[in-house]
Image (cartoon, rainbow, N blue to C red; front, side, top):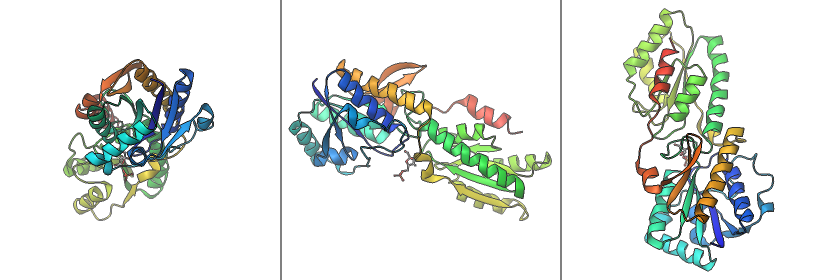
Length: 324
Ligand code: F6P
C-alpha cells in the first residue's frame, strides 16, 4: 500500500487532531503517501482531498475540534453517493482509508468496504464512549473533565442557595459521561439511559437527603434517558415535591465537545492513530483499532457497531452507595 487517506466524521471529539497527527506521521514514517479528506464522507463524495505531510500536522496535538472538519453525511448512505466517493478515491489513487469517528462512521465504512473493497481501519473518536472493542474512545476523558468542571462550579452555587440542580450531560444512548462525571462530582443521583430510574426513585433520593439534613443536591441526567432530559425530569419532580424546593436546570450541551484534549486523550489518540495505520499496512481490513486492558486490539466493524458495550455495574453501584 503506497497511498492512504484519513478523515474524521460524525460528532467531533477532543483528541481527533492528535489522532490525525499520529496517522499522518505514522504513514510518513512507513514511507506511505497520506491524504486528508475534508468534511468526512461529504468531502470524499466531492473529492475534497488534500495531500498531507509531517508539517501539515505540526502544532495540532493540543487543539480541540478537527483540522479536517467533520460532517454527518446523508448522501453517503445512498448508493450513488458511495459510487461518487469510490470514483474520487480511484482518481486520487487511494488504496486504503483510516476513518476516525463513531458508530455512524463505521456503519458507513463497513458498507463501503464491502461494496468497493477499499481496505479501511477505524479509530474510535466520540465523546460518548459507546463503542464495543475499546475501553475508551478518543474525547471521552476530556468531555468527562469538562462536565466535571461544570458540576463543581454548579455545586458552589447550589450550596449557597440550597438548591437542587438537574445537570444534563451528553450521551445520546450512553450514560458513560453521566456516570463518570457524576461519581467524580459527588452527585446525589445519576440517571443513565442503560438503566431505568423512575421519577419516584428520584423523589425518594431527594427526600432521604433532606432527612439527613442535605440542603442542596446535584442530579446528573444523561440526555437520552427514558424519563427525558434534565428539563423534563425537573418538571416531573416539581409536580411531586413541595413548592418550597428551589429547582434549577443546566444543560451542558456542546461545551462538552470542545476544548484542549487531556493528556489521556492525546496519548490514546496517538496510540490509536498509529495502530490504525500500522493495522492497515499489516493487512487489517474492516476493523476498528481499540485499546482493551491497555493492549491494542482490532475488532470488526460489524462487532463494533452491533455489540453492546454495557455500562459498569460497579460504577452504577458506586454512585448510589456514595450518595447516602
Ligand atoms: O455522538 C456524540 C454526540 O455529542 C452525542 O453525545 C450527542 O447526542 C450528539 O453527538 C449531538 O449531535 P449534534 O452535534 O449533531 O447535535
